[in-house]
Image (cartoon, rainbow, N blue to C red; front, side, top):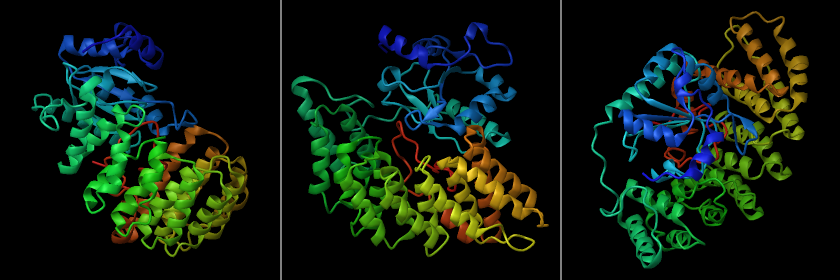
Length: 485
């Protein structure tokens, strides 16, 4: 694999690690340079484990709590440290737009956290897991060790044949006379291929694009293949990439499609794209208002939150739908959408009103009704991060627990106090808030597993899975739903 001095200069400041020569026996021998890590893996014939672990995400505006838990707790666990010696380990605290990862079909900034296990010869990825839904405790260590075992088990597995039979995985479009035939071949693969082949072809076209020469025929498929619903769904899924703004219009056209699968896929893709164009926001507003399916409506409201953050019409609709939703489930999407309204005092005030109205649980056992909504709204306040919400919780909510006697009082008080800390700006409190929401989901499932199990799974359904990750991590992606396989 070719390596350049420019790559090394790019990645050196982006890697935070302990030099292998100085690593202590109780610490992981993190590599300080990705180029050197590839070379070491080849020389030692060990799997290269790349741990993407950014301190900030969403354009460097938000601290990543899951990454912090891995960095400060899980990666320091003695069992992980011992097992890490079977691998060459690199820790990326920011993501590169260039280099060896691109040669493996990974381009652009990377979602954090994630773990990538690469064959010792550097030619293929053995295992890749984006996001982290296991927290920072014992389950987290167990999950990471299992991931490492899975990568080792795949080490000797045969490489899958390339899509189309002639193009190696991750090979971008050539220059010169071969470019147009290459593009035509990828379009043919999308039309005639199966799901994985289509996804690979869409990815290659988007990464190979020059001045729209790959994107234009891809967009045209959305018009030309109107009866091929499975093709349309996979193309729309593939177009859901952070700041792929010219895809927003073609994707938004499917928000009102008669097939719910295409409406749901379009809504999630627009959240990933994050277009702030008035026409896109207007399309989402109109479609969300007409959507009858609560699960798809939730996806639309989440997309509205990202695309229309800060806009009064969007804020008012999300607050209305969150408060007046016909079911607790119908309020989840609007609540997550409001989490995009960082430092928005009006959004925070509206959420505070709902938290106050729901109040603390009633009865000695607390009951399951509104358990998830109550916790989720508090997470929304923590995500918005208005200091006034901390005052609200301390003065109007927490005191209501003083004369209440129930087994859940101490836990709920701790949760409210932690939410208030997050609203004050303490980023380290947010992981505990998220754990509190997960605890509330488990509590509610104890009362009605069938209902709450189905509802929370819908929030991380097939429309949201198998997404190409980049610079954007959706809010609340693993807060309520199950982690994607």
